[in-house]
Length: 292
Image (cartoon, rainbow, N blue to C red; front, side, top):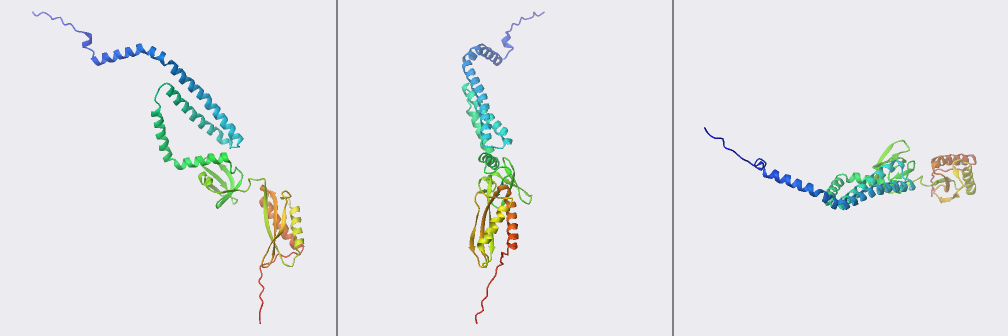
């Protein structure tokens, strides 16, 4: 009969050495954690202060931006959008600064953000250009909604100003959408930027007509018109000697919104007054002299 052999073993024989080392490392880290936290407390407090200050600074900066936009009469529809962009941007900067106070290397974050920005910039170059032009238009205000402008071969009333484009409504009721970058790189004529506008006329009379009387007829038509104004002062004078007529220039003034009404009204009044007073509006004529 065989005797049972007594086997003795150590618990460490059943646990891998690597696991024992990991447990020891964790235990050591837990023991040192309070000391590390205590040592890092000033940095944590500094980072927290930076982030809290950044929160309030960004909020104040956003309110200041809105105030500036109101002073510059920027469209209210973009106030909230621009304020939010500024606040988010500043808070991200303060968070990164807070991480650097903790001793965390933010160069990798900065590199990642920079790479993402470059990639996005290359892919959205045209859109970014349109957006920047929209911001420029809203701040510089070369025109506003309701103004009548001319841009190269297009003219119309400004209907809406967006970040990416501007919409015009032509006199014959066509809607024209113009990219903002095209607007900021070309000359713009704003016909309604001023409260008053000059209306120029050229009237022709015959060489046999009385110039002084014709001028008085034009001046009377200007006085009777409900669309013209006396200030700035008007001017009616001989503008040239044509082949078959004398040209009288009439430089009159009206409120900008009454330009076309004044233009049509004065033309009609002068024609009727010329007919009533026997002042001729000659046709082009050619005198032929036959020499024997």
